Length: 252
Length: 165
Ligand SMILES: [Zn+2]
Picture (cartoon, rainbow over the protein chains, first blue to last red):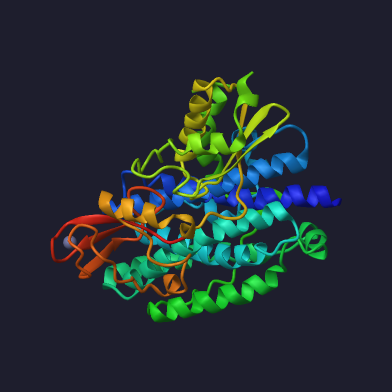
């Protein structure tokens, strides 16, 4: 695998995860439990879509086949997407969304912290910019973990259920393959084992403070890094890509 | 065309007339969005940087720049978006902060994202309307990506806070 191929693949993993979770969050628009949360989730969605735009634009340049960020976002099929499985999981109830977001935000927080010192200047620049935003996201979701976890019997139960359901999707966040190996060698991306240690520590701390249990699920669902997704991604893409595909090349 | 009649400094100054689309009391230089103007082979290159990566105002600003330059006869314009160095609220000038306050938006009071952000401690902010420090955060996320929502417990008015980044 060449450096260029590895870089393109890795950028799709980063960009697709941001794009898909951004889209999921945007589904809350007009449905948030309270107005402030509605606004918060959409603000966060916007940051993710912005991050995806920067990363996919760069992915297109790296690939060198003339594809831009829109081509990559709207003209690829399900098996060509590299987003983590957790990002495509349906919103469920609000506690479920918070659980998903907290697990992913924590991952992204530590990953982008490392990417800030990437030897690739563009990746480093995007990471510096995005890490500032992610810091606010993680604060927000951490606060909600505490409020719901250490809240009422009902909110605690819903959040615990959300965590239990999503837990099997967390291990693939830290899986590494040839793509990682090629890029780690050149100091472009971090070793995910390092991210895993920080992630576990923080997740365990927040769960303990929120009186939640660490899920005992040992089953690990993976596949996203080879484009194998859960049944939910296809439906999401159908909605997200419809207009672009129905009116190719349309200009506002 | 007319490009030779203007220096990049003059154009930079001219672009200071463009207000931020979401906070019209301050312009794109005061906000730190406009970074550089240069000429590359007769093309006027304007470099801007986004406040937040997904900021939808960037497209509007790009269009405003092109319209402004067209007015003085400059057609060959390229607006470049750069992410590095990353925009920070530290670039907002003191006069601009005063304008924000007068407009009813509490200006950023700290440098960059401070460590407290992760610990969830909201800071004591002064109400831009009555000056009271007896305020509380309603939401970390407000009407636009760059703002948080607060309320004053004395004059009872809600207000926006331009959060540190
Ligand atoms: Zn007041």
